[in-house]
Image (cartoon, rainbow, N blue to C red):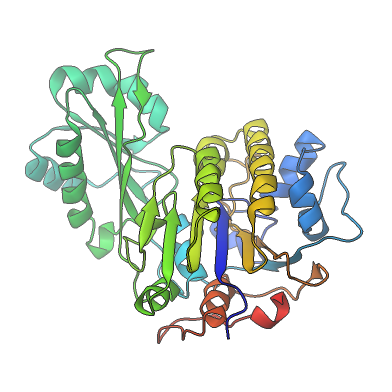
Length: 396
């Protein structure tokens, strides 16, 4: 018999809580996303995360833990070989990734890939380097508009991104080119995790602005996940933010695209007010995309505060048979060198109004406890070949 009718899993994209032992192998030494933000800012206005036990789990700066947290919390280590969005989310739902996705941060994409992309899309490629999305539009937007070329760039992630001006490129044509890029990069040697359409508007430098018509073309998960198990057994699986893109729609019954992390929490609050039976899986990407990659400590800290404010609203809306889990998919220390994700432990904080006393749980060596716990609650079996074991009995 299920304990919870609804489970909310909210991913604070990139909010790591300290370096894993193997972090140096990933080029990450003494990284600590949350801890270093606290050290730099001193304090954050996060009363709801605080009462749930976030500062009992990990603290720094001038902030102190509470004596009686209402949530149950632990550290999760990543079992997969990677530190990217897809690897982290897939592992939460039971997939262990052994072979990391390809990155082209230092060199750009190989000439053979670009030539094939130009041939199939019918457009000349400009850019082909690692760059900030807003900066490369400022640099090359006018050329793209005036010549009909196509801006292609990458980042520290395993990603190929294509910019297109909505007035001169046309959204459908941009999406067509991204689908072509997705097929081309299925090759093992060019295997990137995501191809992203990055539309923008404006006619000249200083006026360019990205729109909310972004679309991600991810690889399908390498196997069945907890989401498939839930959907196949008639349960609701509601994705908020880029969850649907990360899983290529696999196992999703309803999806809500978010314009920002604040909007994503507002959507989650509205979903909480409605009836459903199953999982609401939320990704809040601005922590990572706007602040972590751009190494903006203050912006990251303010984003955590914005989340905490809406978290307070969500906590009030939760019903007695709801379970809330807050976690992350990797780190992205805004005080570290470069622009890449960082290999870190992530928080696991669980709360339900019907739960007994809060406190620490035993740390786990995989994110997959999340998916395993969710399906266990609903009396569903994890798909064959997945990893992770349930900790449901610890959350009652």
